[in-house]
Image 1 (cartoon, rainbow, N blue to C red):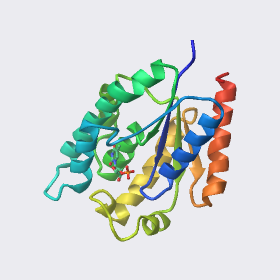
Image 2 (image 1 turned 30 degrees about the vertical axis):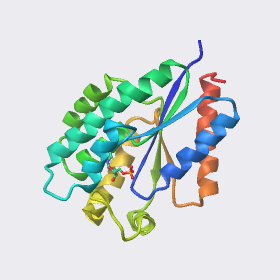
Image 3 (image 1 turned 90 degrees about the vertical axis):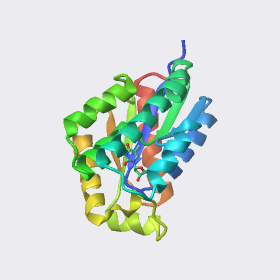
Length: 209
Ligand code: TMP
């Protein structure tokens, strides 16, 4: 039976992860793999509606409510999109996943990290990505890339985004086998060289072809 794979893309707003995910999808397809792209929040259907609320709702949102909405979307993405595709032997690339909640709601908003991790585990049924790439970038550069039209999360301020960045680096230290950090300040082509190396290396070590 073919082995499926679940790879997640993480990092600050404006870090370039979505562009890199699409480049990796094209590369993997050119190597003959079946690739499925998804994202959190908002893989498809119900997830899109949750995303709309999370990014554009203008009223007050409590930090715990925000967390549960991200987690609800995650459960849906895992059950409806990720697991069926991985079980069918496909490579699933997901734009944000569990580590976003630890970085943004845990480190950023200051919610209890152990609780967030426990809730993540409920949302995913305990499954973790096979490989996670964190795109590290300083907040000044990432906010410049985001530009002046910011959504609800992007408007959370420099201090918040610094905590998120440091959060990602802490998470990466805790799970060095799964989580790899790349320098996202470089050009798109240079960053993609690093991403391709990581993916190739993973596929080679796990004997996936
Ligand atoms: P993006 O899809 O453009 O990256 O935007 C999603 C936003 O939602 C981004 O600011 C990060 C944030 N987010 C969280 O705060 N927690 C989460 O669990 C997830 C998945 C995203």
